[in-house]
Image 1 (cartoon, rainbow, N blue to C red):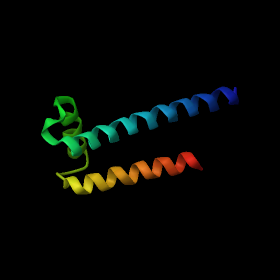
Image 2: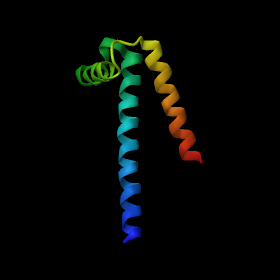
Image 3: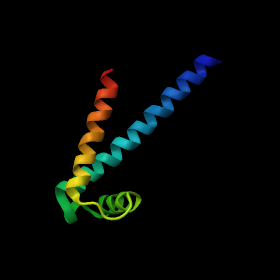
Length: 78
C-alpha cells in the first residue's frame, strides 16, 4: 500500500512540475515576442501578472522565470 502511495505522490508531483514548466515557458514566450505572441499566451501572461499582484515589470518577471528554471533544474540534479 505504501508503495502505491509513493508512486502516486511521484506521479502527481511530476504533473505539478510539468504544469509549472508549461506556464514558465509561456511567460518566456510572451517576454520574447510581446504582443505578437498570440491570444492564449497573452491571456496566460495577464493572469500570471494579476496573480502576482499588480503589474511587475517584464524584466522582474524575466528574472523570476530564469530563477525558477534554475531552481527546478538544480532540484532535478540532486
